[in-house]
Length: 341
Image 1 (cartoon, helix red, strand yellow):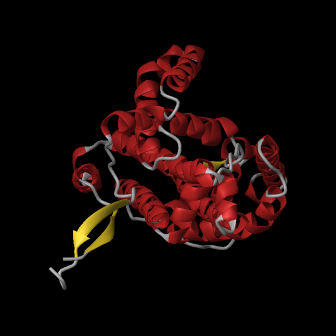
Image 2 (spheres, rainbow, N blue to C red):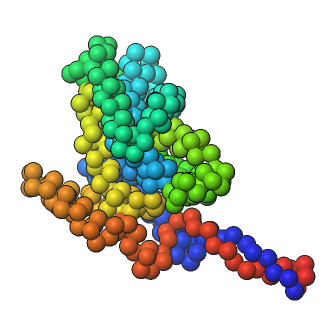
């Protein structure tokens, strides 16, 4: 009897994790039946942060591109949505993927410039790009200039006949978007690009010496991240119904909190942003009434996690238990060859 090796992605814990995800998805899809208006808004916000943190984690945790300027694509997505609907009469839900496409196109020349920078210079460069985007948006008088603009009532009502149905529709789109983002990341990491990204994450020099085109791989990730981030940004401001340069390109709301979420959850792991978002919103809902002390508490939590769990909460759990919620890790299994057994 001869034997052959087979590559397995799934494990017992990942099968259980996928079952839990499926049950949770069904329950969340039915949220309009059991949740109130505030619950749906909170859940939509959670979905947005899970998607943003997952995309930033792909960019920084796997490709090694630590950006502090992802608010550039959040704001760009929001402004493209407002421009598409107000100036060109495009349906709002159609404008969401259009925002992603335009952001991906814009990301190509931006990447050509940013990839000339390394390390902390790259991080600073991304923040400068975001500030340039903010200043440019404040000069567009047709979209309110520096004071911003609200989405006209006629565009809002065109999505659905009633306010309740509009809120349900935006909620379901937000849920679908985060599911698509997570599924796309999992599929990417299970592909040959995923192997390349894992090699780059572990040792970029060794990845280059193995024949991996590191620059091209990073470019693919950067453009895909811009595409997804802009769609999330468009949906965020579709729900807010108002946009301004300061809110659209806020480094605090769309990058600082996202980095906090990813770091405490576990950078370089797909489950990390999900865990981090849950922790972040629990802290926010509990401590938000404390004013500025709330931000100090967030900082203290981040410092404590970095000191005692450098790989994040999920990274610590994986080290101690070996769990994985998503079938990503590759394992070799010795399997008998049925032709010769």
